[in-house]
Image (cartoon, rainbow, N blue to C red; front, side):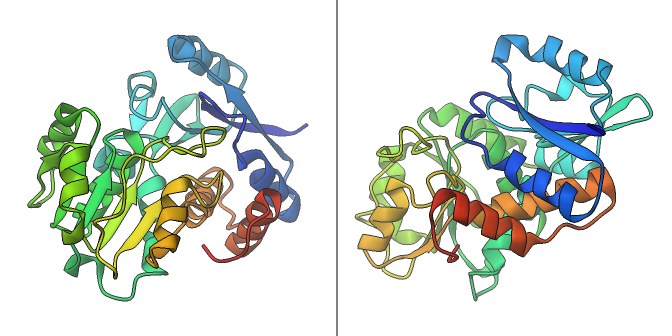
Length: 281
């Protein structure tokens, strides 16, 4: 079977990671195999130990382990330190090294769609978990200062604002407050699991107050067009799906593990075909 790689999360059944990584191993003629492991939160310690013992060469980390895995790692790369969360682990010389490719992967995909510099725009991030942390810290690290955070539990958004080590003018809001002042934002970024398959009819807030020129982004990629993005399209707003972030972060992780660059275009095609979508992302 060759070198083993994988994904840990809860849930993982929806993930397209095995599809794109196993195709990339084949495409690059590498002897590797990628498997998704369902890991409950209270089994994280044993699971990480098992992966290390089995000699897994690297693995991705998804909800809800992106922050809680940090104490189980031997070292953090600068990307993980900046993000305060880990989504990629490299097993090297008996040590587990944590990286974060979410932030850079997401920002790369967003820049492909947004014409004005991100530093000139006012941004709202919905959520305060590991994905929000990675995106928020990466954006502020790159000079974006006008970013507000909203969350169902406002205290978690406040904690994230206070934890950010880079200059910002951020405020923390409730979902109701954010909904009321939605018209003040150029970009709205949804980072929670609300709307994830199979609960694809759910959305964290209404976009009825959003400005007509707003870009609405959802990092969920299954379904491609979440209920939030469907509402955005119905309102004539610009839509940015989670496919771009997903394939860019995956490509960066693959390169960390193998030192080989996979085809982002091919990864995108696989995801879109698998989910029955179109190539706009």
